[in-house]
Image 1 (tube, rainbow, N blue to C red):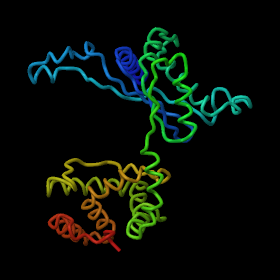
Image 2 (image 1 turned 180 degrees about the vertical axis):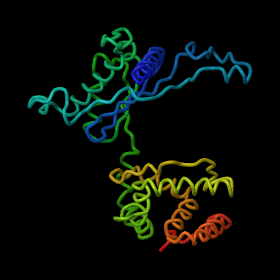
Image 3 (image 1 turned 30 degrees about the horizontal axis):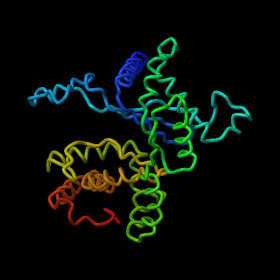
Image 4 (image 1 turned 90 degrees about the horizontal axis):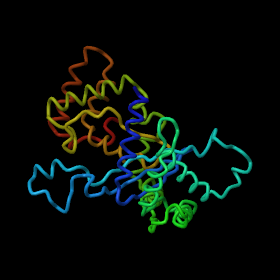
Length: 296
């Protein structure tokens, strides 16, 4: 069944790429893997959009998407690669990156038997107009190599993703700030920091889910108007940019986390009513006067 879903997804992606009028590709290296993504604008006829012919809200709602995006493929750049020879390590990194992007593009047009739809592949390559990567020298040189490749005759714009550089430049100043640094250490970085401890304990995660349900039943929403239960904090300590989402989720779930900490602090079963009282107090105050961090 997984194989069926895999090939159905690939066939739908091939159909979209063949109908695309303009395509942008981006590349990002993560550990031993290189992720190649696409974003494409669809042809007018392929999405029911013919010269602003829609005259009612229903017609607009029934139109197909004008933009599609997703993963074109993942290339293993390290570890047990397909070809691991001395010569392969001596290849220019930018040239190797460009070759891997072309290899991923070719693999995206393979069928179940491994045959490549050459016409579809060439049509896709002809519609690629934009390439985006981080501001690294190798990645930008890769863009220039692709722009001069005969298969990508219409690639005219090699862009930079400034978000990578902004994250790197902002990391040290933020951690140097006394208030931010102290709170980040206590919530994310210390040996028994709160967020990693929650993620590594199935019991704590279960209690946090129960606390979120209690907050929703009592107030109707969590922080920032959140009306659903979040099942993960999505924290990965090794990636600085992954801290932003867990911080936001921590702020949204601050009442539920406070109740969970109270549940953990109450050892005796007879003290269970303290949890309810504390939770009711925090929810009633809507979290305005919570200490930082929740419990010292």
